[in-house]
Image (tube, rainbow, N blue to C red):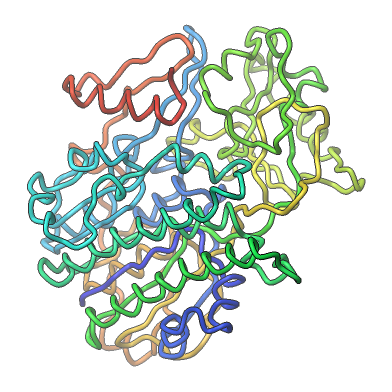
Length: 534
């Protein structure tokens, strides 16, 4: 059966329910009335790379290997940072599985699909700058067929990293309107591509991710959550609220049009990789580690004054650590983790337990406990690629991301709430056999792959780690179309996703030996624009 995955990156019912109540999203309201909805628990680290990859593979991070955008590796030559891409995913995606079974697939703006592998259909990956999007897509002539599509503009379809960085830091008030408009226009370009392919080159499974939901909520969550919305908004606050509503109103129009194209004989599922909430404080974890004597800077390190969690140049920042004296360090905000280094194996367990106890004792300005959970990687990320996760992954009381910067205080209260990821997102479905107008409980993001495989008439691989969410379906529908389980096929897609050799370090950068000169230059420029190399 024709099936669409309508991905809303970071969508949360807190915002969606409010917007439906205000009449901003009438198509979503109608969708809920004729379909079923559920909470969707994200991956142990609820961020884009880990969550969307787990959804697409039906496997956990320890098996597919994608924990964060980058990962740290310790070698005899020093500490290296590796930038993850599709070659670092060691489990076949549902797009590859279905393609190998003769089904036709389309994946648009989906993380971790670059460089694209050959499929029976189309792949235009997400998180790729516009000038490299054509090279990263499949098939090679796809862009030629899309040239006449309204709003098809490679420069806006691709990721503008300078624009994205603005949304994660303090942004001047005069930039907000243009920044939000950029994401409205970018989503329009992606939907035009989706609409054309669904009408002219339809697939059995079509997936698209609208990542502007995440980005706008990072910047403007306090204007969308009723609990934080301005009570007596200024003219500027009213304008920002209206622009946010414009974005979601357009997303709602896209959903309505998608349902029209699919018709009554197909199914549409809406999913987010994680939810969203408000963060009210900044936890400068390296300040804590430095005060405890576990990490050391080289000389003086400037103290952050802007409530920042990200750095401009990661490799320059890594070079500010005194690695020889450091035993525990946080590298990136997105991993919410601490890496343990330079600790002898026989002392590791004792050191880690002491550090855990000290982290649990960290208190905020109000005297409250700041860290609510500490995940050991062997407990939460078990599998052949467990080593790619930090030794410890932290959950903060407001679900915020840690800051790796130095600061005057270990924990600082934000002047205004900001948006951050919440571990519970959304999952909705509508179409033949799906229950109508009801809440069917809570499921895990690993359950979505079985849901999609079954919907298009394929068997569910036995190595999938989730369960089929049968509560979405009427019992009679499943009796007519029962779930089938396939024999295990293994974790690695044949000939596709070998270990990547792309390396970034403060000392050097090397590229995958399988790359040609143009591919190497493309990757190097992507890393430079992200701030991972200089």
